[in-house]
Length: 493
Image 1: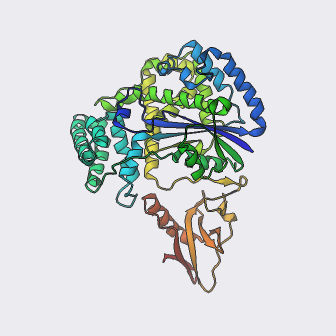
Image 2: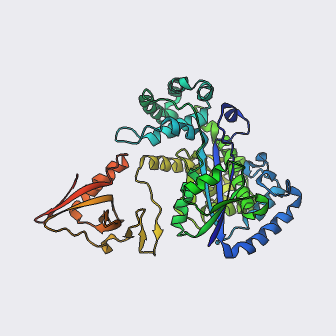
Image 3: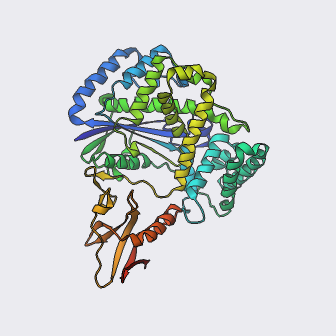
């Protein structure tokens, strides 16, 4: 059995105008879950308590929390951090080994408001709602338009008008430097097309479920199904606990962080992530606000060997230990997360000598590196063929989301059989393996089975996938598969 511990930071979830205008406000809500085989619990607790005792003078109300390191220490990442705080962070990261699972999520607070605003709209062949939502959130995050924010809370009936006015004004302002802002203008024009049909949701109730959705996928990828989830006690309403149980974590319960070192461990990591991301976001904000490019200051890259080692440790914890696709989980607007992970990767891959020899150019080099990562992510937003978590059986096969057994090499799958030249199937999924072998997953006799289908149906599968990629999912559906002489046909009924 495994034990997991949950905590969060930047948790001001009462989204109000005052919240957004607070100088300590950060756009993203961040959660961290750490866990391990319960057989490791006693050993890990001993190590963690020794770590905490070393920093006894940094405790607050008897606990060593992430608040022990102030935001200003991250002004230029680890480059600006004091020796004492570097030692604390380094000692903390040394506690993580390959037996510890780390999952974290990053959720945009403003995007959550827009999710309710756009709740009635879905991706289709004409409109990519995901990309549109990304564009609006990024614009609000970057430009912080006062009239739009004021309308969100004081004049909800005018919100759409204010967004429209703001976007039109930005389009005009951007014309001064279309070389840099052409793509942004195109995105804003697409948003304006659909704004006429929107209606506003007058109240907002924070949804606590998203982090646990990602955690479900992470557990599936790690093939973990016997576990408990311990959540920091938060009061009478227990909204976080209720959300965890709603998402299927039936063995979730609350404990006081003073009695659960795993919660304090999750808190410390969440605080480091949040403060680092916030500082990096502040440093890069003007890169978008101005009509000229502004890059990350060279002071971020003035690193000695010790600081580089700590960067490598953090990169190892967040990107390498028990790595999987859903080790991190984010809302559609994930620029801060991508920039943060990109910085860790960049520093991990550039040698110290190379970095110091060209210190003046490091901001420019990193800008190119992170822009490539953001472009790849934006391309994935348009791709609606989402990666589903796989429950591995071995290196050759896995269970898909319907529970059907799928072989990595689809040629090993059973072929679909039909009698009398025709068969009507309840098809829930169609796809191809890495070699382009077409497959379908069908429901038969109250179970799901994945079959290999003839190469002649590859074009039909490709059409289904292309439509899904553009937001028009044709499955599940009843499908008539016909064999006439040596030719195969598939038709949606």
